Image (cartoon, rainbow, N blue to C red; front, side, top):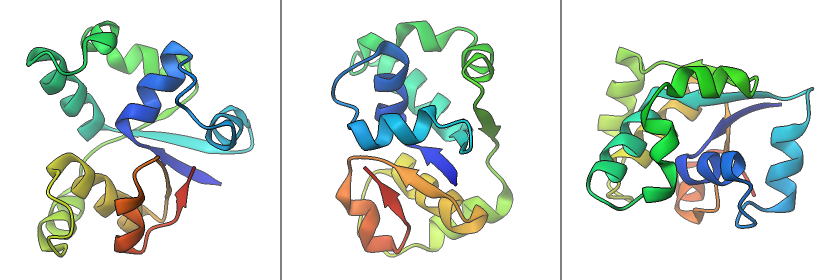
Length: 128
């Protein structure tokens, strides 16, 4: 399975937070699955940490690429196609970071690991 991990589940995975569901934890840990982390998640983490909304992710504001690689995850850059699809999505969700994650999942045929049920309205496969 090819998984795109949403920002908060990524942080929960890295800090060992119980908020991550057992099903998500198992899927992320399964070496048969390829786990992708979007560049947009790095932007979201840096932005939310800067404004004081994600203090537990301070460690990710440094060398996030090394941390992600150290977990065996694959970095997912933002493409022009991803941006076009995100911009064209219906306005069902106002969070621009999540809209880009939806677009990347659609464009790259990825399942999203997230507790956010709003993703379901966009027709992506969500694992939680």
